[in-house]
Structures are given as structure tokens and as C-alpha cells.
Length: 206
Ligand code: B4P
Image 1 (spheres, protein in one colour):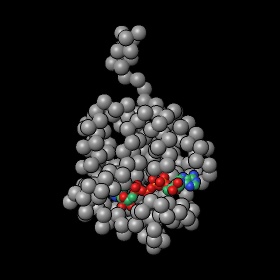
Image 2 (cartoon, helix red, strand yellow; image 1 turned 30 degrees about the vertical axis):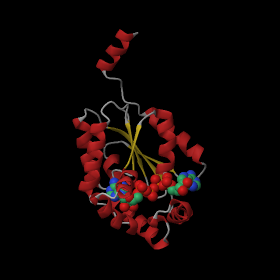
Image 3 (cartoon, protein in one colour; image 1 turned 90 degrees about the vertical axis):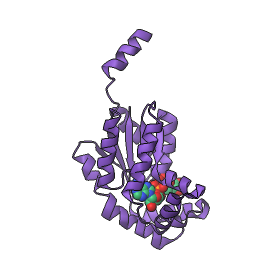
Image 4 (cartoon, helix red, strand yellow; image 1 turned 90 degrees about the horizontal axis):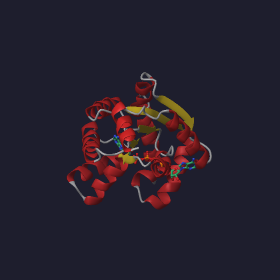
């Protein structure tokens, strides 16, 4: 499996780039933000709990998002790989992801971080807020809190992957296509080696 983590502060372009990457690499997109918003739309208990935290710009408890990712991995055992978007956001989530992927005999190939300064993040999210309907995109104080939460709780996840030599950082300001090309280069450089079993199957088929 080819597993990529897209990382960066809120509004850095993770969701935007994920859409392009899934079209190119045919990987399964796992956005914890999208999964949580689906729970809110369905009106589940979990969604109601998460909504209060998300609307104010706080993180949802680790156990909730780790549980969602665990079920999604179970449901997609045949996937060629995953793009994790907005997950992991804490070191505890990163450790759980490693554990869950190991249970499926796979691991993270690389983490790509998009670097964008706070002023640009606020501008982008307020702009998106005009059409997204998301309460967390419509209020500058809430956006600033999300950036602050990123700086205090999430930024250290970069160090977790750096210690495994899997961390890569790109400038997230610029043309969407140019950023996409740079992410694609990194992904191509980190294709997992084909397993002996997969190679044998391919040879038999040929
Ligand atoms: P998310 O849904 O992950 O949302 P995000 O951080 O706002 O978005 P993203 O960076 O993907 O932005 P996008 O590409 O769309 O999280 C929402 C909330 O869910 C969190 O605050 C938290 O409460 C909760 N949550 C989610 N995951 C969690 C976890 N693991 N643990 C705990 N809680 C969790 O880009 C934004 C805008 O910028 C778009 O309008 C786009 O058009 C624009 N843009 C993108 N690239 C651009 C570029 N290069 N130039 C100009 N504009 C660009």
C-alpha cells in the first residue's frame, strides 16, 4: 500500500490537494474533517458532540478520530493506499496510525507538509466561509483559535515523522497546480518497494 499523510495548518490546502491526488493516484481519501462533518449531517451522537468542538475551532478527542480511521481502514482492505488528510493531528494519533497500519502490514511512506503563514490562512478561510456554510470558517477569532491549536497541539506531529525520516515540507503559497506537481514528485519518490509476493503474482499473470 502507498500511504501519504498531507499535513499543514487549517486552510493550507490539504483538502484542495487531496482531491487532485486521489484523481491521479487512485488512493482512498481519508479526511477526518469530512468524516466528522458526515456524522454531523447524519445527526449522530458522535456528530453532535464533535460539532460543538469543531464550530469553536477545538480538536475532537483522539479516541473518536482514531476509531473512525480504524473502521475506515477495515472497510478498505483492498485499497492501493490512502491519503490521510487532517489526520494525524496529535502525536497520540500518529502513534495510533502507525499501529493500525502495522496491523494491515503497511506503513506511512511520507508526510508532506504545506507551509502557509497565518495572515494567508485567515484570508483563505474567511473567503471559503462565504460559501462553505462552515461556522469555523466564518469568524476570524475561531480561525485564529484553529491556527493556535495547530501550533500548540499539531505542529509537533512533524517532529514525529522527521524522526522516522519521512517528513517533507513545501511552500503552500503559490499556484495550486505548481504545489500539486511538487507533492506528486515527493509521492513518486516514495513509492513502496513491490513485495516479493506481488512481484510473483505479476509475473505469473504476464
Ligand atoms: P478539516 O476539515 O481538516 O479542515 P481544514 O484544516 O479547514 O482544511 P484544509 O487545509 O483541508 O483546507 P483546504 O485545502 O480546503 O478540519 C476541520 C475541524 O475538524 C478541525 O478544526 C477539528 O475540529 C476537526 N478535526 C478534523 N480532523 C481532526 C483530527 N484528526 N483530530 C481532532 N480533530 C479533528 O483549503 C482552504 C481554502 O484555501 C480553500 O478555499 C481553497 O480553495 C484555498 N486554497 C487552497 N490552496 C490554495 C492556494 N495554493 N492558493 C490560494 N488558495 C488556496
